[in-house]
Length: 349
Image (cartoon, rainbow, N blue to C red; front, side, top):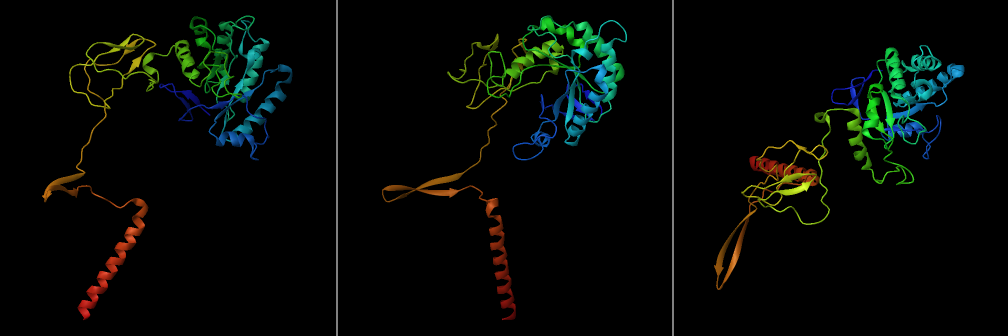
């Protein structure tokens, strides 16, 4: 199975774009969901497509047995159309400079043992190598050596390194050559709710906060960023239509020129508060709302004695609702049948 990253930064699996939605870790193989279904079947039917597998205790002494156990899990995943994200751990994904070291031998055995499995989606490198809570950050050089060696063995699957959401961009960019995909350990859905993050923001919007960090760490250019429509005014007066400059946020200002405006007019502004850049022409008509007009009725007034009474002519074109269409067709068929009988009677009368 070929897994690649498209020029649009989409994950592509066998030619199809995939939005990865994964569990870390999944339920045990063979476990049962509360409804009685296989737990992994339940996961797949709910929309998940990735699961984290692998192990933290890879060992050359037990590698054959460990690979056999991992293939069983991957077989089970593949049966339910799930892709695996096996972790390599520090033992195999942080190589010293010594050629053919024990760590390199372990990495080679793992990769060669699993790279051709149809359920393999991506490799998970060392977890949070720059986490400030570690006794010491894992040097990027060892991860880069592991990445290069892995790519010699398997060029069909990306390497993912997840960072802690605590490091500064300057501390994380050095890991760029050791990965294809990066992210941060923010679990947007946790149980109990609100305890999935040590950060101040406990809401699912924390994903957006960390995406800004990931963007800067990955070094992707700004034109490749996704664009979101934002509306976050919760209180206060609406923006006044005046000809002076009005500050919105982060140095972004707008000004209305003289002209006519109607209730509901809006503009979609491609603005990036993070970089203070705006792709916006100086003069632009409203994007909407587009107004359409149609006559509903014609009212004329006529005098009756000492009062005026309206004469209302309905201009609406009323059509039969779809819910009553069958009944209307049946009525028309009855009328047509009756007309045919009357015509026949007249011909034979």
